[in-house]
Image (cartoon, rainbow, N blue to C red; front, side, top):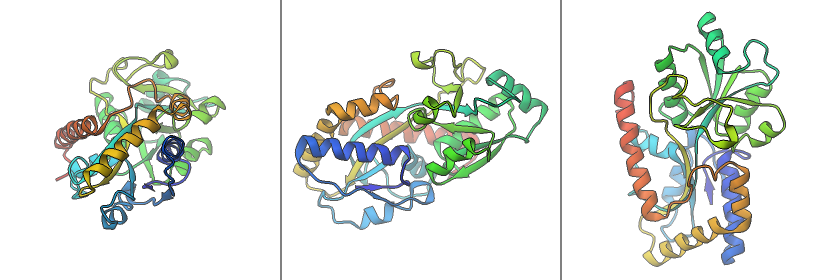
Length: 292
């Protein structure tokens, strides 16, 4: 199982949890291999040169969809790869340190940014065209915010950038930083979702603060190469579904706030989600003047 991001991040955590769940449900055995770099694209060549026999599975996220829509990769995740399932769909938030004194919530943060343009920095995992950077550009344009973006390639570095004081704000998904939220090291001040989830009932959404756009979601799934025999694809799809229903995996997803949005998509549903998301990214890129 190839993971295109470093150890400890959301993709790594998901892949290891799913591998364990499938092993328990089917007896299959996985070797999880992390191959970070290039904002998630460095692992793709290794995946593409593997034999189309179903023995190599790649975990990937919506970043691959964005990269295809932007023209950074040639492979269409809905056609050149075969999705065997989407196992997580979630939303993003903006975080600050709880002991921050210059601002304590979204309203006071915006006021501080207005008074000190380009002084604050925000840590983001991703590169130009990624969901993170697109969303930040959307809200910055909508509200006239001026902050410096610091991009990271490794999840641990991204999380540590806020905790260690290297950046002032962090853009991430709640499940990936749950341990820091529970430990009181991070505080959410904005949720990118149309309505407030009950577990974050005291955190405003981007629409509530005046940013009128449909926020992109983070989704993670598993793929095999095009050309894998149909019976093997069907078996792996069934294995992925069984893994998703595994009690341990269900508990893992709940602990990561991945039960707040319906996370599971089968092969057909995954193709539909990916294709729709490609169209959304292309529209956004055209509006923002990036991409092909």
